[in-house]
Amino acid sequence: MMNAKLVAAELQRTAAKTRVFLSMPYIQGLTPQCMERPDLHAFTDSQGFERRDGIFKLHEAGLSPLDHGNLYGDAVFEGIRIDNRRILMLKEHVDRWIHSAQRLEIPFPYSRAQLCDILVQLTKAALDAKGTSGYLRPVLTRGMGNLGVNPAKCIAPSLYIVASSITLYPPERYQQGIDVTIARHIRRNDARFLDPNIKTNNYLNNVFALLETRHSGALETLMLTHDGYVAEATADNLFVAEHIEDKNILKVPAPQYALVGLTRQLVLNAAQKLGFHIIEDAHMLPTDLIGPTREVFITGTACGLMPVLSIDGLPTAPPDKRPLIQQLSQTMTSLALLEQNAFDIDSGNLEHYLL
Image (cartoon, rainbow, N blue to C red):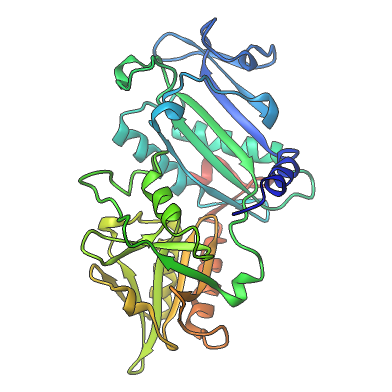
């Protein structure tokens, strides 16, 4: 377990540069007092409520205790990487955020273009003149309602975006790789229970998997389907690359039990560009990942591309024998930084970018 005081100290350091965009209906006696700041932008929303929004320091922002995102996980979110003052895959992340909200029938109080502009303006406010990298966490909740779970009794959505930083793994691990373990009792939900392709704030399935494996010392946990096949990691997609009979093969679990991640798609695009034979495998077993020729890695917006050193203590390809991972990582990074995939906050034309 991590030392709580060390975690608190790290959070304090991070908080100094963190900024939050906050938007919610203003209703006297219900809305948190932070929304009474006189310089906030105000307008009338589609339901006739006065809505206020603005950018806050972390300690200034607040959500209502009656917010259904906090009470019931009734909310949707995204994670967006900022690299070299460019927001990576801005439009794709916003489109997925909107799609998730549509699935939960939570209306957005802003248009797609307005959401993108808000993200850009918040990024500018959060990064200082020398700031080049960071992480955005946009969240849309059902909003304030009564203490019953019924979404019909909520007033109007709340929206907040955190501009901060995120570090999932130590930097040296990107060369060495991480140890991964397997959750054997907690299995991955599928769309019959909770569609993994809706990015909701309900991550308890993943949390339970991490609780099951928390004593292993591994930095990530694989989740299996009901039938025991590999689905994904708790926060990342998973791949295995291997050179077989003069062919470069890239296997990835089929998406029925996994989020079809945007970084996952970048890797698939890179593999296609490099001439890999790509297999989406719905019946991948944990044993299919073990062995000195199998280059295993995980991907996600927050972690990028991270090699896997071992699974449940059994080794995968060692650090000096991962040529395919190196090729995929370099090509994926190049694709992510292309002008059409990354918005420059200092010189980009947002209207043109969104076309």
